[in-house]
Image (cartoon, rainbow, N blue to C red; front, top):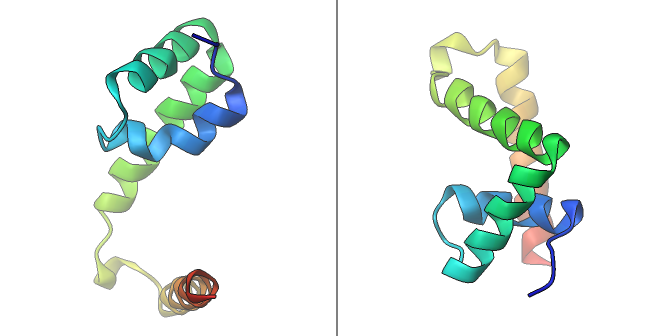
Length: 82
């Protein structure tokens, strides 16, 4: 079994956090983070980001920030449809 690269880990981080990886891919992912301090920090940063964003409510967002987020998601959705 080949070692996972940092780039592959970044591509799989969402699947890892959602427990959507195969057992083999999960082992490779966890082995990589155990050996790569940078990817371990990245994974921790993603976890913190998810936790912090999960605490946001619409009332806590400034109207300009909300508008920028809506536009970003509209652009993403349009790209996905293409």
